[in-house]
Length: 222
Image 1 (cartoon, helix red, strand yellow):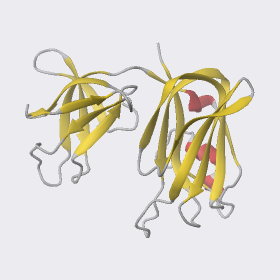
Image 2: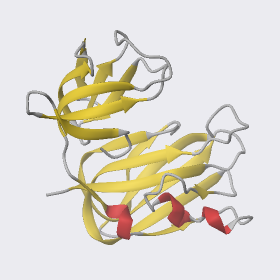
Image 3: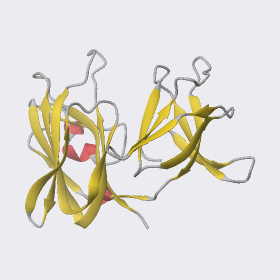
Image 4: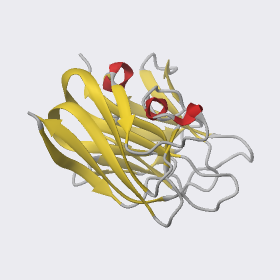
């Protein structure tokens, strides 16, 4: 499943399950967008049930991890009875530009945020910047994945606020916005948006230039 350490496997009952690996030892809950997985039942690998709550307002399912028994230094493995829709990565064939790029190193260009490689990133040289991706052809975007870089010497992320805009019939319109991005954030759009391009406007919380590992757009696969 995109953006998560996971695998699909067959349980002892012969049924397919989604196995999710939670490596954050401090996490007490996780939220999965409906667009990523339609979760019906959640258990630990040992079979202990976990509370599941659907929130139609945000389009996410919350899984409560507070009762899960963990092994020190080992990931918590969740066994989910869930349907996992096929996702089509629109960014794979897109082209990217940015209003600002870290010029001291050519390895931080805008294309690094849409290449699908979690080890590469775009970096801005300014506290406000816009990153744009143009698709090979107009497509129905329904999910956007964001991931932000944090410097090892800093205690917090740099993004203060952001807006995501879609180019629909030659006009830009805001389809999502928020405060902060963090390690990983998924934006489920209210409905598929037929767009020829997508852009994110990022504003720093201070004067540190923002940097993104990922700015990826997805359509529902067949």
